[in-house]
Image (cartoon, rainbow, N blue to C red):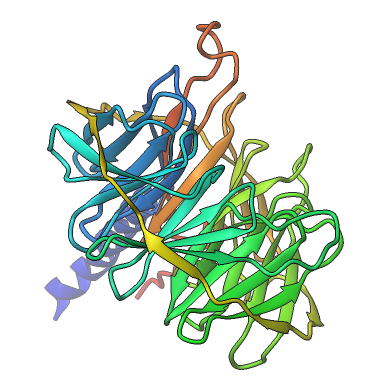
Length: 404
């Protein structure tokens, strides 16, 4: 009818405007949200893990602290007095475990309790990374010696596994340890190897990496591939031990100046995120990026453990403090976005280490500048939060609006 025909162009125009407003609003929602919150400016943070309730656990070695952070609310709790804390993680029963690197101990705390329990590991041990298996055991990697430790909290039995040696001069050592499907994984820093222990058979399977390899943080993706950050070669490595057994693929990180020097990895939504000590946080899309694949024939060796009682327990006093972060918006520059790589450059003085991911969120523990405790102008320690709800390289296409 004539009346409706007169209003048709106006209705189309209104619809188009509303459509553009929605697109604009969506664009705002999809903009990466970068935030930071201050950690202890006098400390030195290392590992970070995320528990099943979404809380972050951050280990501060220098200040003998472990922080529990709820990123959604900004609420945090600091547990102080956890000496030599190198890696702190919550087990399925709600106990907080940590490795005491300085005194060769394994600690356990019921969050909120005034005292923690400590067990001594073998003399001259240097405990770093910890993990838990499905039988309730706590596994610990030794950062200086070729040993793995397995502790049974119920029986107090402590078992020591000797990592097979392939060098007449140097022994193996590993910072990090990972449990997956009944197997224990480590990266050998000294001898450039990936090792898998089957505790049921006491058998190590050993893959030798390229010359000068230094495998650090470990992660398993949904396909059962093992990923690691090669701190020395500046690349991310992947071992396919299932569908294409013994294939190792290396992805060289595009250089953004000095480095790169990746230290931790985490897998989320098909992407492999990593922290880079040179002041970058990035992600790799292995479906897009080019890598170099080689076949590596592993060797195997059986090494039964030696087991004994962990002995007398010691107690340590713990103090607890609480607070709430005020997240501050900040600028993480997208320095590279092509070829399957997204690399963010952090503010001057940043040195990200610990890493955790969930959904579109990536959190990292930034050690900051070494000069921070004495120079107020230097970058102090921070907890960073990068939220990328869509690929920054994606484009929005608007349909044409036709006049009637």
